[in-house]
Each structure stands twice: as structure tokens, then as C-alpha cells.
Image (cartoon, rainbow, N blue to C red; front, top):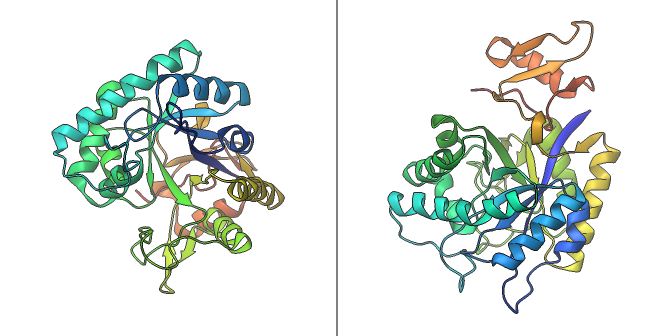
Length: 304
């Protein structure tokens, strides 16, 4: 059986403003990225969201962004690596007491919006984010775009990393997301989005908007729940994943310190393989095998 995380951005309401349909979407995901007060969220919302996640059995992650409430953190900002590192520490410091108060361990950190997209291609910013996390708590998993600089930076500073893919977004040939400002950036056809997602999980491939086949690691799938149709999509995608033998599950304790290690339970009696000693054909066979376990993800064999 394949295993993959389903994550969604929650806790983005603040003050008198309600953003998203958190209560509806939380029933269908395995990990929540909770806004930390810069691009969205406030203390009361953070506390409420973390409590709701705990009650639903959903793992909690930090979702730090640029200090850009008006632009919802989606505008590029010219920030130095020193500032970026401080932004990360500040926002982790905001959310972690609420995790402690609710008896929840912070599982991961996923940057938001422009913070995320800029660090995906800028190694200096990526390192600043990774170092900010590592200097606070090295047990926090860095969740970033598959194949991005952010994941490279996380590994470089000794963090565990998870590769994220998007169910409803189009990809460019280099593995990056098509900017929202361009036609075709968002996939509105539910069936197409679900089929693409299942292929990313089970085959490690996605077709770029220009037609190229792109290799991709799908450890966690980002889904959205900001309107009724989006919530229905989340519900449908989880049901279809499970129908195809893909279990939605958060990282939690199952996430190994080294993502290059997996366990295969068959006639080899649970012998552990290191990916450096596994051929490409063996990797393909292991991805297909229903006997692969020990990870919440479908494709824990790293090429690193």
C-alpha cells in the first residue's frame, strides 16, 4: 500500500475576518499548516485551529510567511537572508506555545506564498529558512516544493525534509509551479486533478503544461479548502486515493531520520535497504509493492 500525506493551509482567519472553511476541510486531511500571524492568523485563531487539529487527529505544522497581511503573503518582498531567518524564528515562536498548551508537538514547517516560491529557487533565502528552523528545533520537518532549493537547503543543515506536490496546480518543465498569473495555472477539472495526483504518488511523474514528462517526489499533497467546491474536491481526492490503495497519513513518528531508508516486509523479513545500494529497477518495484511500509509516504526511496 502507498502512503501519502494530505496537507492544507488552515488558521488564516484573523480578527473579524473569516478565511477558508477549516472546520469542513480538517476532516479530510492528515496535516494542517497553521498561519502564524504574519500573512494571516492571530493568537485566538492559532489556538482554536491547533485544538481542532488535535481533536481530529490531524498533525500540526507552522505556516510562516512574509509580514504582508494586506497582500496575504503572496507578494514578493526584498528581504535579506538575515531578515528571513528572523521571520521564521519569530513565527515559530508564535505558534509553538499554543502547540505546547494543547499537548501537540509541532510536526513540520511549510513556508507560505511568496516566501515559499522565492525560496524554492533562491538558495540564500532557502538556507535562511532552513537555518531558522534548525536553530529553533531540528526535529521539525521542512515541507517544501518537490525538487526545490528549499529541500536542498534543509538537507544541508541537517533537517528532515518532505517533498510537496499540488493537486490542483499546473507544473512547468523545470518542476516549478506555473505562476497563478498565467493561463492554465490552476486545474479546475476535478477528475484531471485527481488522476494527476494519483500518478504523482504511484509513478513519480507529472506532465508539464508544455507537455514534458517531469519526475517528481510526492511525499505530501497540498489541497485547499477555501470554498465549498474546494472542500468537496478534498473529500473526493481522499476517497479516490484510498480507492486506489493510497493511504492518507501524516508523517508523525513514522517519518524516518533519513529519508533514504525504507523497510520492505516480504521474504527478506524486514531487511532495511539504503537507497544508495538500490538499483533503479529495484526502486520502481518497491514503489509498486504493496508490502512497502514504515513511511507515511509512497516514495521514500531518495535519489540523494
